[in-house]
Length: 332
Ligand code: CP
Ligand code: NVA
Image 1: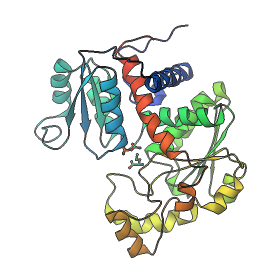
Image 2 (image 1 turned 90 degrees about the vertical axis):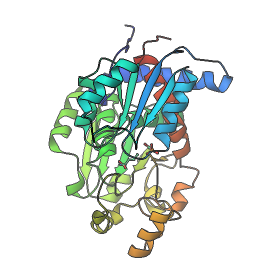
Image 3 (image 1 turned 135 degrees about the vertical axis):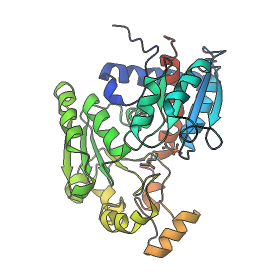
Image 4 (image 1 turned 30 degrees about the vertical axis):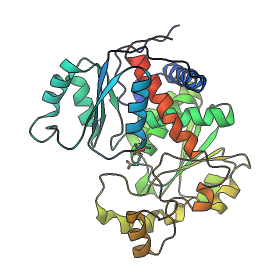
C-alpha cells in the first residue's frame, strides 16, 4: 500500500500509524543520503512556509529553515514582533497565514494552540514542540537509533527524568507504536498521565512494545540498549521550580555508574540543549546555587563514545525535511 501524507497535519504521533512513521523514517534516510551525495531535492520550489516560535530554539528552527531551503521552500520566521496571541487570536492568525503560506510550523505552550491553528486553516500545520508533545524530535530519535543499533522493535529504551512533559509523553507514544520496550524511570509524580499510558496500550497490542514505570534506577538501566534523558526544567516552567526539581531528580542523573549497568554497546541520547556542564550563564547560576557540576547527565557520559547526541541533532533536519516533503505533497 502506498503512503500518501499530502495535506496532513503533524501535531502528535498519535495521529500516525506505525507504517506512516516508518515511511517518514525511510524518506528521511533517503533525503539524508541525497544530501551527502549533493543530489538536489528542491521539489517544492515556489512554496512558502511560516515558522512560529513562541519559545526559543536552536535545532528545530535551524532544521526547519535548512530543510525548507533544500526543498526549494521560502521561510518566514515569526516570533517577537508578531501579533500572535497579543492583538490577534490563534484562530484569526491561522486564517490569515493560511491565505499566504503552504504550511505553518508552531512551537509554543499548550497543545491546544497548535490544534487550534490546524483547525482554522487548510494548510498543513507542524508541531515544533508544545508542553505536551515534541513529535519531530521523535522521528530524529528513531532514525538515530536505527542507524546505530540497526533496528527499533524489541529494544529497551530507558528514559530518566521528568517523564510527564513533552519528551516523556512523546517517547511513550512512539515506542508503543514502533514496538520498543520503554522504561520511564522517575519519581511517581513525574510519570505521564494515566490516560496516555492507557491509550498507549492499544498500540502496544499491535507492535509488541511495552511501557514500564519505575523509581528504581539500577533495575531500569540494567541491560538497556538506549539511555535517554532531558533537561530537568523545561522551557516555560517558572524559575521557582528549580529547587524542588533538582532535589527530586538528582538521584535520576545519568552518570558513568548508570551507563555501566546498560549493555556495553548501549547508546546515550538527549534531545538537547543539555546541562552536561554548567558553562552557560544559567548553568553557572544554578550550579553555584545548588552545588552541582552537572544536571541531568554528567559531562563524561555526554562526551563519551556511547553518546550519539549530535547525530540525533543532525537528524532533526533530515526528518523534518521528510515531514515537509511528504505533507506538502511529494511522493518520492
Ligand atoms: N531538541 C530541540 O528541540 O532543540 P531546540 O530547542 O534547540 O529546538
Ligand atoms: N523538555 C524540553 C525539551 C527541549 C527540546 C523543553 O520543553 O524545554
